[in-house]
Amino acid sequence: MSEDINSYYDVQKAKYLEKIRHYCAYRDRCHMEVSDKLKKMNVDADMSDEIISELITEGFLNEERFVLSYVRGKFRINKWGKSKIVRELKQREISQYLINKGLEEIDEEEYYETLKTLLLAKRRTFKAKNQYDLFNKLYSYAYRKGYESELIKSIIESL
Image 1: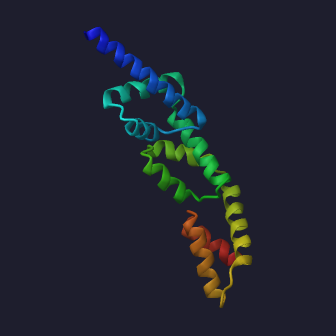
Image 2 (image 1 turned 180 degrees about the vertical axis):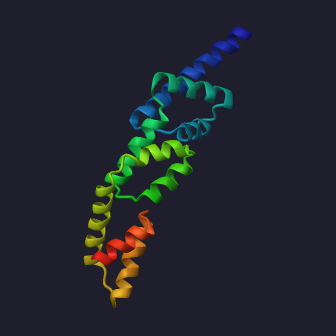
């Protein structure tokens, strides 16, 4: 009887493990995303822990690799600022150490130039009544993208 239960458990675990391997192979995932996916699949906590442990051992799940690719992608493709990237990583329960390591991927000069390019492009599309209105619109846009206040102000003033 207990052999049947163990056999069933192993079959279920193998089934879930295969699905999650595909999920992780599609793109890098953090532990929280995998854990949430397993919860949605109604996998119990013990089996979930075992699956996550196996994924880490097999190299399907690597939090540092996730952070580095996340930071690169969100900055280079989405043009997000550091504040927004940090906020999103914290929501995914990423450690401060890994967040800091990920932010090192962003070259400061490239960061500055990216924001400057964004603001120049956006300046052409905004219709403003006066300089003050234009400043506020540009500032709000860059702030929503996750850039830091002082950097935004200095670049807008230099434009």
